[in-house]
Each structure stands twice: as structure tokens, then as C-alpha cells.
Length: 210
Image (cartoon, rainbow, N blue to C red; front, top):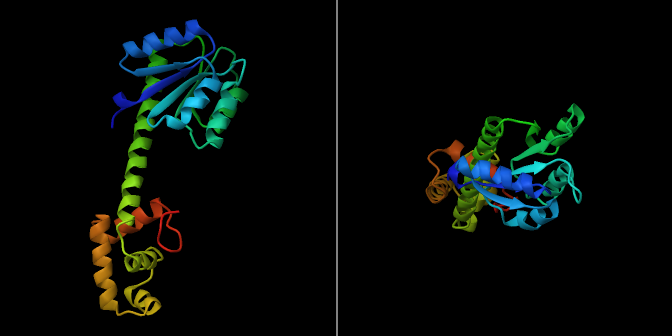
């Protein structure tokens, strides 16, 4: 997954602005989708898996900051760049607080926007890679037996083999066997890596992903 796979979503109520930005970014090598309103984009956002957002601040239906708030509330936040011709420090701070990674005032040079979108696209690609990695871990967790999940829970809690064995009513040697098995299934090269995997997906008390 690379930034070239990232789709830049442009949200602006002015057609001329949408077309101008789309032409600029397409010429710079980005894949682009345009949306005439925040409402239109919100309808599409749940299906966006690798994208970043360029949105105008002032729009008639839902403004840019409200758009970011709604994306956060829907757990559909993207790396976002706010563009405005009426910016000030207070607006910039508000945009950043609600998830924008950049705040660009008009008029701006093409290079400034392209560089900012490049950073947003890289962040989007990183998030997609991270999401894919977490999904892999969840799938591996699904291959564990009940006993292996119990041992995993003990390992993540930082308990030594003897404690885990006493809690489960088995021998420390048996715990070692289960631990070796679950590490192989989880494709963990070390105990710290195994613990990090489990922490990344926030295991519930029964050893299943939350």
C-alpha cells in the first residue's frame, strides 16, 4: 500500500473550485474524487478505506469543522486538510482539535497544497497498513484454542509460567507448550512482539479481541 493508492476526496460547494483542485491533483499523480457538499461526502465516508480529505471551511449545508466532527463521531475520520479564504487562528485551532492535519489559507501556491496532501496521503496509507495488520492479528487470534487464549491472557498480564499454570490447574511445562504453540500461530518472533500484538487489538478478559 502506497500513497499512490490513496484517493484524495475534495469537498467544496463551488464547482469551479472542485474542478480546479481535481485537475491540479490529478496532474500531480493523485487519484481524486469530488463531492459537492459535506452531506454527499458523509454518505460515502463509511466506504472509504484508504483516503484523505481536502475540504473547504465555509459551506452552506455543513461547514468543514462540523464535517470533521461528524466524521469523528461516525468513526470514519480521514487525514484532513482544511482550506479557507476566511481563516484565522481560532478557526485553525478548532480545525486541528477536530482532526485536521493542516489548515491552508487562500490564496495558496500549488506546491503548498500538493506537499500537504502528500503528507496526508502518507498518513492515510499508514493507517490502512495498520488496519490491515490489526485484522491479520485478529484472524490469527481466531485460530487459537480456548486454552491457548487463556495462556495468552496470562502472558499479556505479565504472569510467569508458574502463576499461569497455577491459575489454570496445569503444569508449567504444559504452559510452555501452549505458549510455544500460540506464538507459532500468532507468528510472533518474540514474547514482547506477542504482547504488543495482543495490546494492539485490546483483548477482552477471555482472550478474544474487544
